Amino acid sequence: MRATVGALKTSATMSGTAVTPGSQVTHRAQVPPGSVRGFGGEVRHYLTQRPRQLPSHYLYDDLGSALFEAICRLPWYPLTRAEMRLLESHAHEIIDAGVTAIVELGPGSGAKLSGLLAGAANDRGPLDLHLVDVSGSALAEAARALEGHRDIRIVPHRTTYEIGLERFGGARTGAGRRLALFLGSNIGNFDPPGRDVILKAMRASLARGDGLLLGVDLVKPVPDLLLAYDDPIGVTAAFNLNLLDRINRELEGDFDLFGFAHHALWNEAHSRIEMHLRSLRRQRIHVRGADLTFVMEPDETIWTESSYKYRPTDILAMLERAGFRVRSQWIEPVDRFALTLAEAV
Ligand code: AVJ
Image (cartoon, rainbow, N blue to C red; front, top):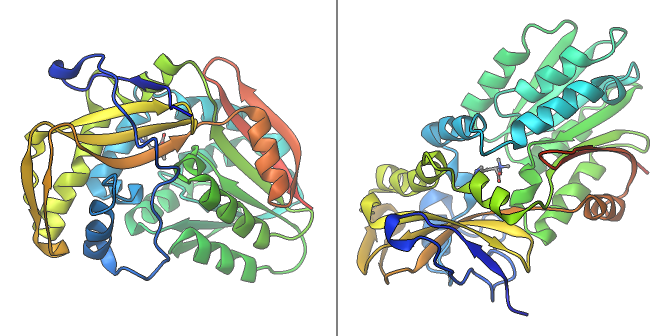
């Protein structure tokens, strides 16, 4: 099957040109954890794959995180605001009096959980808030955003989602229902196999009757999707290009950032937006800290992120496969974003 591609310009020289996505490739390459060591090892491993790629979580250094926060305020990226509206309108149903502990994977600035607590029932009891993130600065910022709420205890876990979920699962004390949050359409960065693994890990950290709240961006008209990932003022381009600059800074790379253009495309066959960095010319690149020298051809790309988009029924199916029963699904009708509340069975 041929992938239908909506390509979007990223530079004056390439407006409206259709390109081939990583279409023969079903999923981004995966390595077993621990098999390549550190940032340098991963850069070497992924940049020598075909197509060349980089793991998207490296987009979030200090500058990258600040640029992502800026993306969330762009009029062309409505996901964050749509989700916030849903959280605020349904906070009562999400955090009822029975909930005693919450875990959030990737709390970001803490604004979403904070909005949820602000709208929660007045009769809620004390809450343990477990925050899981690999970034210490993200955890500190989220903790600050949550500080003002009454009757909470913040438990930061500076680690991967999997390990954080294990610790949350092991920290169960007494009765009360627990709630796991995976918001912001962060699940969209996972390929289907990895997505099922993380949902099962969430289920394993919970007991029967506990809750899961999943925020997922939905399939919508392609021009809207492309605009969200290639905004006209170039913030998403900066977010993407910063990854090369991070490699230059941290691994003594010599990427010429003017030699690359941000490129976003819709891969219809896989229902995902892909972000790439496209080489504008033939160029040789050396990354000392990755022990790597390679040549990129004109128009060759480095695939830096996938953002899968789902239909509401896809979400029900993936949750059921992972051991959940859906209790409610709320859909933001204009911006097409879904918040789904499920129960562990
Ligand atoms: C934070 C992973 C949900 O995929 O929409 C925003 C990241 N990338 N613009 C997304 C992102 C480009 C975002 N997630």
